[in-house]
Image (cartoon, rainbow, N blue to C red):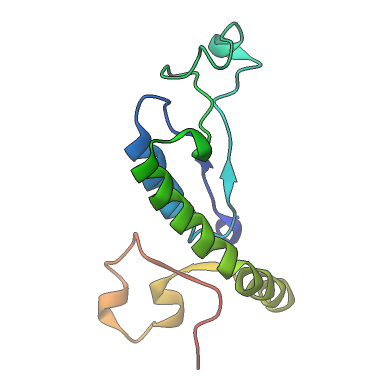
Length: 129
């Protein structure tokens, strides 16, 4: 369902900036899921952490990021933590109203022509009246 859209946040162990960018995006998504690349199955099954660090099978831990990247990731995750009460309340309202939690802009701004071509933008929760 689009209303609880999210993505798996798994950065390759060799690109801390990419991981941080995913974390920043996820902070404003309905569902946040940070986890590894699945070291228990598939092509990564024989990889062993921490030796898998720096490969496509790496475990992506915020605490393992270089200091500058870690600070940016922590800021994004703290912003997300501050949003949890809002997201929780908005999800309850979405369930009660059958309206999607995450909606395209034209849902709430149907009379605004600029809302239609912005197909990569969305509202999270209820739009203030």
